[in-house]
Image (cartoon, rainbow, N blue to C red):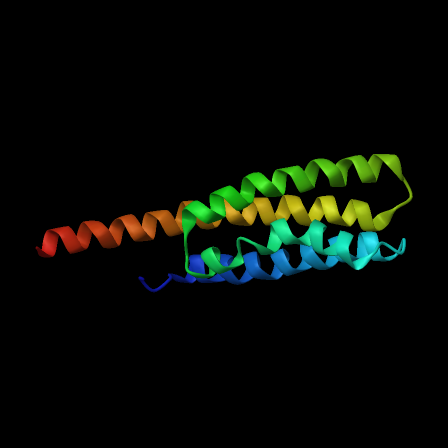
Length: 125
């Protein structure tokens, strides 16, 4: 694994921060209405399941996570429009947009770093 540049390092940290924020927002969204623990686990599981692969810097897993995140965004928009005065649902939609953008930027910049590393290794051979 190559070391991250300053841009990708900052994106990596922000990605994990917003990822945890989205998970906490999902828990808060359902827990305040007294949802059972099984429902909370089922709602958060798709967000958590990608963490080990993304932690190993698998860009492909991060791409798949982005697709899953779009489903959560659709649900957040429905909740925001269904309960207009619900700030938690609105914050959730905002957090998911930010997380999606961070994932896309990280994939772009990290992909370039990895490609440059592969090219330099090929030139050394």
